[in-house]
Amino acid sequence: MHCGSCGRFVGPYEGCPYCGAEMAGRLSVRIVKIAAIVLATVGLALVWWSARGVPIPEITLGEAGGTMNLAYVRVRGRLSRGLTYDPESAYLGFWLSDETGEIHVNCYEGVTQALMAEGRMPAVGDEITIAGTLRIREDFVSLTLDVPGHLEIDRPDPVPLEVGRVTILDEGLRVRVRGEIWQVREPYEGLTLIDLRDENGEITVAVDESVEAMTGALPALSAGQEITAVGAVGLYRTTPQIVPADVADLQVSPLISQAATEVDQIEAAGTPEPVPLVVLSKITEDDLGRTVRTAGRVTMLEGLAGGVKISLDDGTAQRVLLLWEDVYEAFADPSALDVGAQVAVTGTVQVYRGTVEVIPRSAGEVVIVEPASPPRWVQIGDLTDVDVGSVVRARGVLREPQGFSAGVKVRLSDGTGEITLLLWSQFYEALSPRPQKGQQVEVVGLVDVYRDELELVPRTRHDWHVRLMED
Image 1 (cartoon, rainbow, N blue to C red):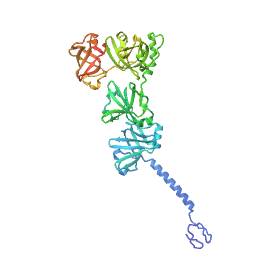
Image 2 (image 1 turned 180 degrees about the vertical axis):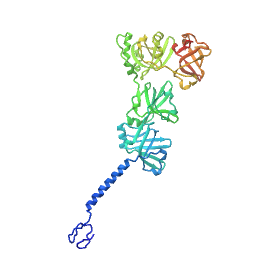
Image 3 (image 1 turned 90 degrees about the horizontal axis):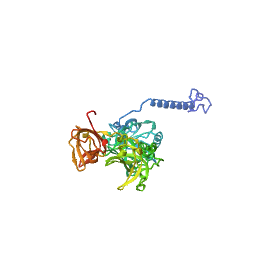
Image 4 (image 1 turned 60 degrees about the horizontal axis):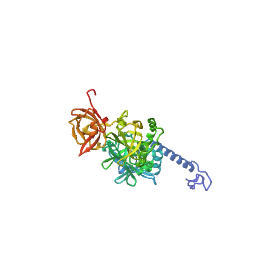
């Protein structure tokens, strides 16, 4: 710009440096600077406001490709494998899958700590909706979770199942099972396997070290304890197993504490003073002739000449509970004292052939805290080797009984198949009416196997019912 007074070039000056005249019609540099800042701020605000109104694009996992590197997208899927967690760096990783593919999700320190603080840690079997930044590296596709709030977890309610009924078809299903621990093992450091069983079969609960690191240490577990386990069904090769999301999903049943709340009912039997409650592991041969009071769950019942023999388990040990016939028959409902029942008992300690037994003097010294569930009905044709060792209920028509040295065998048919009923002598002699061809019967028994053939073994006369016309 040139000075209007002296005509010399004055450049950006607002006043002529030669003659001092003011330059008219010129914008102040300060005003330009302020205007630029305001315009930039307004522009950024508009961009932010516009971005908030645009939904995050949702894609399937199979659509993630090289042209989407660093794109911010939303995906849905099921958490299909175990989590990877590093306590030192707070890194969390897991695999997400849908019908079209699979992707690895990364969560770093700040996000992981926020998820843990909110109690929103994902687990195998969860339905996940997540938004994050795609990272494309040749054949490997990953997604990084940048905002904790962009992770949504839908954890289905567990489906109650018996241990032996879980199959490979249940993969991914969240289930609840209850069973007895028969083994706790660590095949390698960082993995704990808890083998459960019930009357229908066995299954393994797999607890990875990452679950313990994120949710706490496992409770003390030992063989014989009964626990309830909740988790998703996964596969180890072709074998189903249960993968819990939290150590709190494993609940140990405190058998002794459950019974202790009602064990004082034994005083009604006439005991002058309550006998201290002891765990079964503390009852040994040294207590011969001593009166003890204990509690536990019935894991086995079998008939014998003059009574029944019961295996009692409280999680610390197993001991024999021997009920003579007059004691057993004095129960209002003897069928309530069967496998699965929880009882509290006062009795005298005896030792027979090296086995410690507790023998109550009357039915009043046995309190059934929790009665046994009725045995499940089965069709004979559905019984397999998996059912060996379980107690079941069946009905059918008898074939011709056949005697042998230790009792009687008779075939039972229900239209779906046949099975041999094994009636030991002491059991057979107690029956009235005696088994005969053509009888319709309902029978409870222990499934056994002899020479590769299944047998059903009733234990007491209460396991046997002949269906008469009026039935």
